[in-house]
Length: 479
Ligand SMILES: [Ca+2]
Ligand SMILES: [Ca+2]
Image 1 (tube, helix red, strand yellow):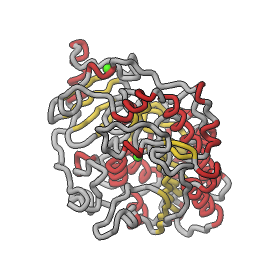
Image 2 (cartoon, rainbow, N blue to C red; image 1 turned 90 degrees about the horizontal axis):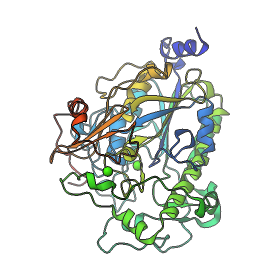
Image 3 (cartoon, helix red, strand yellow; image 1 turned 180 degrees about the horizontal axis):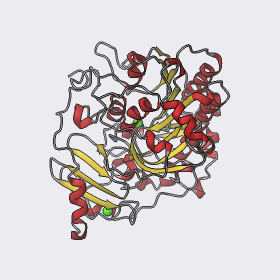
């Protein structure tokens, strides 16, 4: 028996004594797509710390997908273990604590706390919601109720200019959305990453790991907020990516002509893309996202080096994930949402000490909603019958096994995508709008095959997996 099998057996089986259970470091990264060196997402991205993690047993889950392509419902879903279509938590303004189908569920950290773990957290794990009676967003519900110990940290540095947007990108007269000002980038004051909130959060986590004596196994949840907009990071990170050399994602000009939106109407280029296109500044936008990722990667390095240098290095499972993808010009869009590959595919990396191999990309199809049952499996906790996802603990033991059961991503009421590692089928049930892509021959999803009779059987196979029952939307905040 190989050494790693022995260790895994000890991890999952011989855990009668709760104190012997492995610790968990659960790391959330906001709005990071697959632009990480070891994910092959962008040829120029510099992520030495995430790549080092991969080289030291942090296995790349290469075909991981989100259960919803928006921050709030993605996080609510993976933390409750239930799909949006089963809970009615579809949008950023719905708090899972107010939704009839989620308010009584034990979230992932609560489940660990109930089963003998000490849970502690800093940074964004749950989506933040205003609380009725709070003025503005000064206080709010950030999921503090879900942890034994929840530590809000101060910090952060502003952009060099008070003008908005800092990037000077002209707005569209018709655009009154957040993106009119929030789609922004530029250097911060002082060129010092150590003053940034994510850096402070990572240092806090490293300090806990190196100074604390935990009496129980711990579940530590650390939320890093970049590369979420705005892309304000120290100038040094922009300097890492000379503008003239920037490579843009591959696109074709008529990509939107063979698809319809959820209302059954032609898909128009997104306002963010139109603004960048009109100003001729795609390279700047891509440079800013790359710069922000490299800053984020430095913060990940502080955190993971902190773990590696601590006495908890060999008995702590690390699960690192992004909450959904991000388009950088693909499908003429900058942003998230929708059900295309660039929105659905997420970074996920898992290290089970002594089990997951070094420098490995695992090709199994997994979903963020699978993390909850996987973690309780890895830690020897009883199954939670409320979990919609399925444990991929077996896949971590044997990363080359066949693991392509189709997975589901939801978007709003009636938006679903079924993906099996080769084909993706998208449907908006209210209008019956459909798309079908063959990722082997068309990784950028340029060619919608939905009306091609040769693919009828594949379409029907995937379509049969679309949920037939959907919860109505749960109350929005303050409604
Ligand atoms: Ca997000
Ligand atoms: Ca197309």
